[in-house]
Length: 424
Image 1 (tube, rainbow, N blue to C red):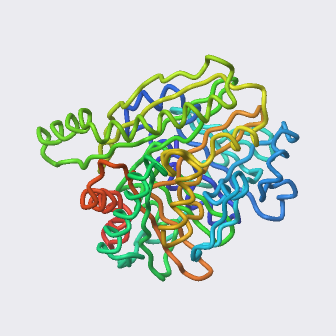
Image 2 (tube, helix red, strand yellow; image 1 turned 180 degrees about the vertical axis):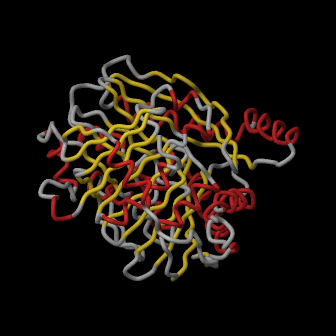
Image 3 (cartoon, one colour; image 1 turned 90 degrees about the vertical axis):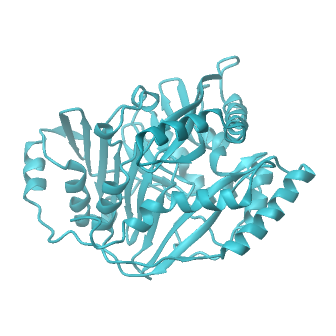
């Protein structure tokens, strides 16, 4: 098996207009909550625009996926797809300009599970030897990233004042939880391939992804699954509840236990579990929605997180109908979902684009696995706009100062990735 397969595939993506690499970093984690549902340790797809006569680039085209049963699709759904699912709109500033969605058919598709690697070319299975030899021979020069100083879109004082306004909506009963995000940005020229490898080294994550759509890039260290379909089974695993790590082992254990018992963090998670159960019940067979794990606490490089797992038996419906019932994910919106999204539009300062959307794959049989786009950098190579967002769940119990600190905690890997010594 090739060493550093993910890194080699990222460099291989330079040859294509379209690339989607999904890496579970399975060697870094023993997360049974995820591993028991994962089909692959890594899956990567590559294509050029010239081959894409059947790509899906608009919500109305999603029904194509059920009419193309012999194809794989890879790509993303942006957060702003919400405007096609609900009676919503967005007029916030947008420097990334992602299309609302983009799902392409890979010309080259690579799978890794354990030590086994397989390789599809134009839907035909081939031995992996020749491809692996080509990847091993690839050499793209020094692995360096520039130092970049990111600018917050709003000041800390503006953030705290905004949270006070959001909590007024909560006290009035308009909503009872909302995910509020702030943006950090820079106009800087980067090499997105090397930058992704830097981010991955700092923060290996079970739903990491590298996405390229022409001159737009997503570099993601996401720890969260949005939705998976395997046969008749749907699985959603929302994350709500965050605590920092400590370098001191005993202190780290204490912090993890405090997160487990924290009433505010637990209530955040349970609110979203209820929202997910409600979403799934719209498309599930009666009595099949089940909470398999509630508020499990798991450890990642920079943080501890609370993860719940909800499953259901899906009715025989289309991919488009499943997305209509469940997207965007509750962990990145709030509850009630539609009202929370209206208030998000009122108080956030920039368009989310692909952030809090989803990246993943759809198989020829209609199975799929989709992540939640968080802990991620977006880069537009046309205007050299580089951006990341960070957010937290706001409830009646939220302390604005602590919510701000949580946002900053979640930015650590993105900031650290752009230091000269981050990837050597």
